[in-house]
Amino acid sequence: MALGLTGGIATGKSTAASILERFGAHVIEADEISRKLLEKDGNAYEEVVAAFGGEILTEEGRINRNKLGEIIFNDSRRRQKLEKITHPYIIKKLKKRLAARNYSRDTVAEVPLLYETQLQHLFEEVWVISCSEEEQISRLKNRDGLDSAEACSRLSAQMSLKDKEAKADQVIKNEGSLEELEDELKKVWENWMDKNKFD
Ligand SMILES: CC(C)(COP(=O)(O)OP(=O)(O)OC[C@H]1O[C@@H](n2cnc3c(N)ncnc32)[C@H](O)[C@@H]1O)[C@@H](O)C(=O)NCCC(=O)NCCS
Ligand SMILES: Nc1ncnc2c1ncn2[C@@H]1O[C@H](COP(=O)(O)OP(=O)(O)OP(=O)(O)O)[C@@H](O)[C@H]1O
Image (tube, rainbow, N blue to C red):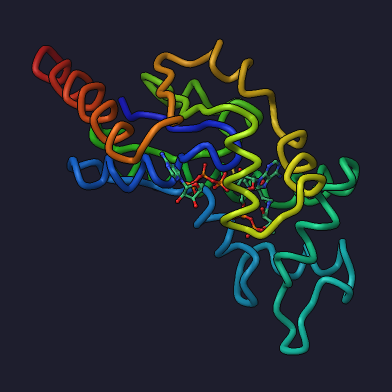
């Protein structure tokens, strides 16, 4: 059975996923599936533009992700409206990609909203990448140029990290250096793949 990888926003899910890829994991990224959905030829483009109007479009008629993010991370009703359109597509595509790999042990699905969309049943284990809230906020500021208020509104749009840690099979703290994250991931990944020998 495959592995689910989640965590809070900017805790380091993508960073962890690319390290696991170097260890031989085949990673399926929900954010990439979600990104494709909103492209002009994406399955959800028309519905999202119909739901949110021309204000979210650039001059070339593309969906402005920053603009849509500003709207939905400050308005839970409109966020639910977007999720109602996008989540069914994301979940369907995730299941299709997992099935195409027979849910093999070396397949890792990186899903930011894994618990919020109740997908844990698809995986033998779910690993949560975690760090302090301060670290999340500072990373969002450095990476996305958000201010504290914008960073906090993104954090509050998800289930608390504490709740995700409580549900997790493995919690991987990502508070130190990238080398420390890699060492920790190497240990848990080798243990995970060793179990394979007894399948
Ligand atoms: C609002 C959008 C356009 C903003 O795009 P942007 O490029 O700024 O952010 P990106 O897509 O890279 O997401 C960054 C992070 O935001 C968080 N996030 C994204 N969508 C949501 C959401 N609906 N609720 C809570 N957190 C979210 C996740 O941690 C994600 O990893 C985009 O996040 C989106 O389409 N979200 C709705 C689809 C969705 O729920 N995706 C989550 C995949 S499980
Ligand atoms: N241990 C670390 N030390 C320093 N910087 C880190 C560390 N881990 C992650 N980062 C940086 O923090 C930012 C967030 O990491 P990453 O994009 O992997 O998080 P994420 O959980 O995938 O984010 P999102 O929820 O937005 O998809 C990135 O700029 C990344 O380079």
